[in-house]
View 1: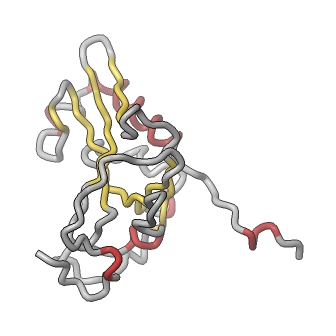
View 2: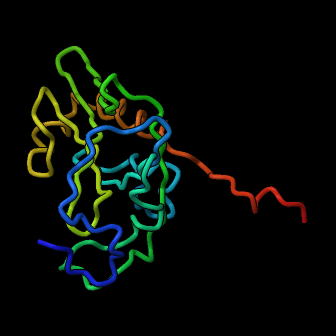
Length: 179
């Protein structure tokens, strides 16, 4: 189905474009966050599929403000005006140019992957997919999988990994001029 939200720019529509499985070192991903959580929006969230928008590197897929668009038909607004943009930067990739990391404790293996997951009104949509012992963690199974007390260390490791990707401040040319 084509995107039927008139306020979404055409450049963001999927229009049958397929996902791009590889990423680039230095590529940005953008996430919405509450202003008081901007320093680390991952500190308190459930670690299930964490939605972001990828910027692209050789071709622009999205700009930071695009992540503020509502892409859900059931929402009665166009833009999240109460949220801000958190920018993350991909710092390393595997040989296949994909972001995939593993964390383990004495008993369990947790994997986090960044996947380009286009939707009709947001081609740049991507997710950090988290799997515990090869079972993808979802909102439905979170309480019985990763939320268990014994997985506190794994949750902490993933949150720390995501936090290291956050760019605290981007300096623009305007910031460098003398007053």
